[in-house]
Image 1 (cartoon, one colour):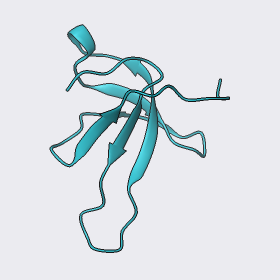
Image 2 (cartoon, one colour; image 1 turned 30 degrees about the vertical axis):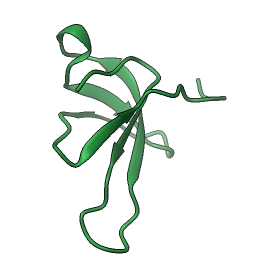
Image 3 (cartoon, helix red, strand yellow; image 1 turned 45 degrees about the vertical axis):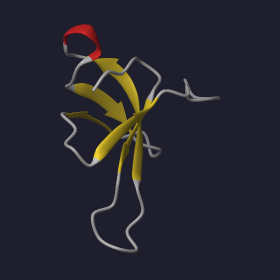
Image 4 (cartoon, helix red, strand yellow; image 1 turned 135 degrees about the vertical axis):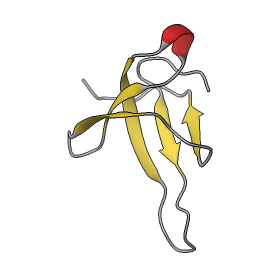
Length: 66
């Protein structure tokens, strides 16, 4: 998995009917774009994530976010 600051991390819901969880990558802590990542959700909460196999990186940059 390779990501850059501003990419989105999408964690797919593991139960039918559960929405995907999408967060913005605000800092890449691993070498060469590898995890872990510091991420921010739409409510402004930040945490550090090491995504699992149910996650994908969306390389489209966030728009209108600071």
